[in-house]
Length: 135
Image 1 (cartoon, helix red, strand yellow):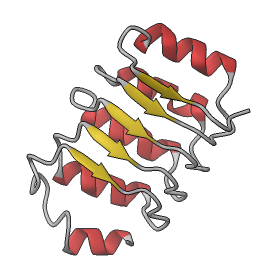
Image 2 (spheres, one colour; image 1 turned 120 degrees about the vertical axis):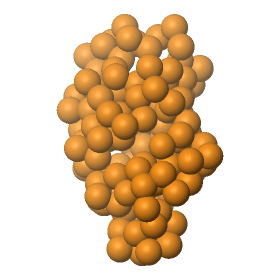
Image 3 (cartoon, rainbow, N blue to C red; image 1 turned 180 degrees about the vertical axis):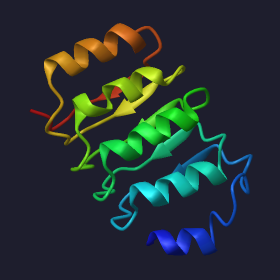
């Protein structure tokens, strides 16, 4: 689903889906940072977001996500998002107040320093953490 379709169907205007709490966009290879921003603006109460295999998403998109959903997001799945750099999104992830589930399987830039700094902030709240296939 390309971004222009989102703006004419799913996310027509900001806050048009105020009660939506969970969405899976897994495998949406045409979703860009702008499309993600459109969805987040339309659904500001998202607590679970599956963006696995959204290969056009970048670290900037994750930063926008964290800035807008920092108080409500609890689950984030970004497995195989090849344009996302772990250290670049670390400050964004640290802003998320109630992060319980983080899945970053297949993101090659995950390193010991990233894990250590993430755990320092979210360790007591995390219920699930996935780094399968990371170097």
